[in-house]
Image 1: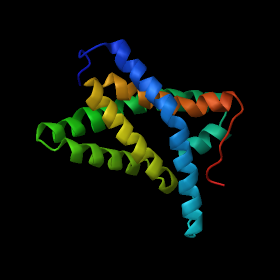
Image 2: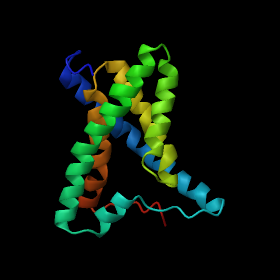
Image 3: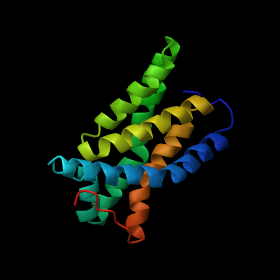
Image 4: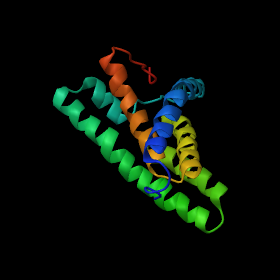
Length: 163
């Protein structure tokens, strides 16, 4: 996974910084996806974890936070970038691997409105892994991305993309 490759600090900062810059684009794509779905007569549903975050109590929010900010990034990055992308790169199909893992990343979240933004985010995660050679970069990016809704909720900011 390249965890010993290069500077760990630099990999983490690259992941966090890239995500902070990409968040407005990803949220813009999410809003655009909702508009397109509504235009073609489909109801955009909120992701289940987002709904639970908004409606749940403190204990549920803490559980979701640990799962979303720690567990999911570790598992998903190990699978998508660490195993799958590395496999495609090792057999000489890095570009295909980048696209396949990004699309699969969007699909596994099982939400029509989130598919395009998450696939684009998956492209960023793959780029970070390839650029740094260290899984810590996409891991930090993914954790930062998943932390953003908690920070916005704490600040009283809420984007209701499903309505």
